[in-house]
View 1 (cartoon, helix red, strand yellow):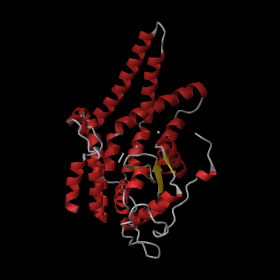
View 2 (cartoon, rainbow, N blue to C red; view 1 turned 120 degrees about the vertical axis):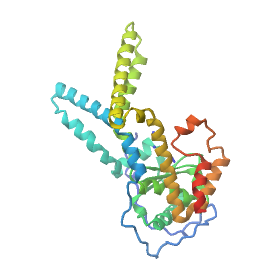
View 3 (cartoon, rainbow, N blue to C red; view 1 turned 45 degrees about the vertical axis):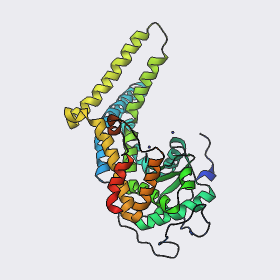
View 4 (tube, rainbow, N blue to C red; view 1 turned 90 degrees about the vertical axis):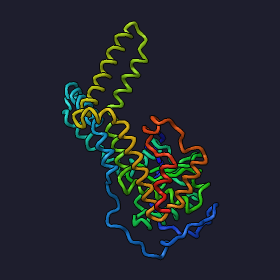
Length: 333
């Protein structure tokens, strides 16, 4: 479920999750979740807490052309630094290549959650409701729930998020309107994105494609801001640079995949995203939350969020429509 400063306050540091007591605070909605792994009961963790399934591999494979273009941009920046400041050109390239590890760096994740995704830490009442449900879902999945950080988005939409290596977020509306069992189904879906490697691989694709996208935006912004008689010349130069970058993208993709696959690359990327959603649905269903997840999807459908797009728009959507998701859940109901 689909992944924008102020001085750092020590009070902002996330507090590691503790094993909560489901009966400590009564939630505002009926607590219809059966807590089979509450305090005092033994929890068995799976040997492999996460993996990288075919969907995550597909996301990385389809992003290779953007990776290569960004690598060339970083290399050119390194050459300019070498010529101007004497900084060896391999240093920027090495730093950029190693920066992907920040996806799993907890302080960096906190910054991403706050300032990129617009999330906040749960309030005490929200934590009292959210943490017991999360603990139960993680225990059923055999996953150490304390490895993840729970976040809340101040939104009136029914939504949830899995991002980076350890971010799990839900909207305030979901906390207020979903029963505990339905909230558990939503969290199980997001946990499926993490255990399947979808969340971190998607952010890796976004991060390593960022230099190429930034150069395009800078070129377009420069073209719009120029108000001199030389505007046409600037437009021509920017247009040639954009064409060159587009040529690099297409050349890299053509070398990697061939021309036929290049033409359908956007549709393939969207299809991989839809497959990731279905795999996360299946993860929640296998854990026993299929009926509750179906109820949440029906709420989305009734709210007009099922998506009545045209065929091309549906092919470019990264989320399957609700009827399709319900169809795939049918075998688990």
